[in-house]
Image (cartoon, rainbow, N blue to C red; front, side, top):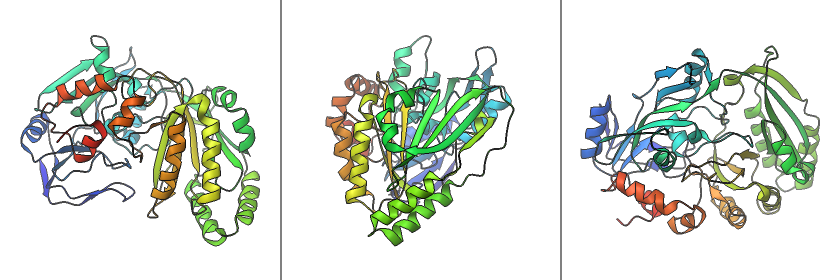
Length: 430
């Protein structure tokens, strides 16, 4: 195994840092089990650092599963595939497509390790489409004493539901079997329309098609709508991705017009209103994700779908009256309910609202002001996005919280995976 002592680590945005005693990359299962049993604690798992919370932060040992990657097995009849948990989502989509399989849905970033995306219940958009843990058929975890545990949905669905969204606190997930669909093509459409009308017809708009989402552009009054439908139509060229350039333009306008919101709104609204619509067909793996090269920090809450419009109206008003320095779009999606105990979508159709603040600017004042709005409407935080909730608040919004904590204690009785942040999150005494 590769070991680096006193290595400095940071997440993708640079907001979270750590200086663990060691960072290790085990070559195989025996190495991983030995690390968990003997390495300086707490043990935390790392993927590509796309979590904005302190899930990875540790003064003990940070473990990378980069050597646990790739396609391990697949079943063409059941459309199932077993992959290493360290596999990055982008390369994984190519592996699946090569065997005629596809993820039913994806988020808009594909650089994460799949194990991390499962652990934080990462998701795309679609009223009938669930987050990544809903795909789980089987999971292999190395527990807090280095023992390998295997669970599958056929013989023990409760175990899958208990550990499906684990935050890296139940053990080290090394491989998973997921239920896929046959490869498909998507018709992706994009256009702009006034956000007020979208919010007035929110439920009907967001549930009318297979996948619907939108971005609200601050100080514009406009929503950029995105829909994706499965199609047999021939492939057409995907337009050039200009999202990063657009964000940079919004930042420039913020810098010059922060004290003239009326002019800022006029210029941005007019430009977006003239945005040419997009309409193209491509293979599924070439549609969902976009590059995100302009770094940011993010808070995302998942609300009952019926509360989405009211919460978003308040968030927009907050941003545009008190935080003119914010220029990143607000992302709005819908997600199907599921049975995963620690999933933010547990047993309720959800509206996800994600707010962003450009790095390296301080996001905390804006996020602190927005969080009470999310909580007022029954929001549950995205585990990988910034929030301030602790075990007391979380236990009140997760019906199976105590059950999940009992499973965690059984999987990790010595709290090897419990950092100070995780202790605060789960209410573990140290």
